[in-house]
Amino acid sequence: MENLEKDLFTALRERRSIYGISKESPISDQTIQEIIEETVKHTPSAFNNQTTRVVLLLGEQHDKFSTGWL
Image (cartoon, rainbow, N blue to C red):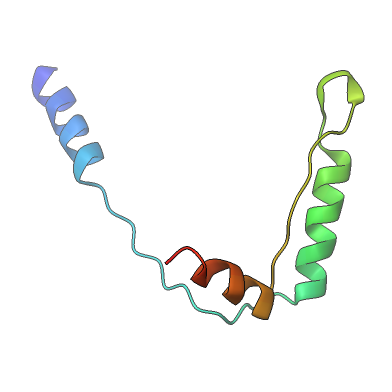
């Protein structure tokens, strides 16, 4: 059992994911916005106070924001 645990922990530590992220999305900006709006609207919140806020930056707005962190 000890070897199995050791192998599991080794696998977890050495796990890597590689994502092929690009600026193009197969989903339209409008669809992304609709999905986010519906998700926020129907996500339960404590005492139904709906305090969740989302900032969605697409296109040039996203580029401006993301380059500000470099």
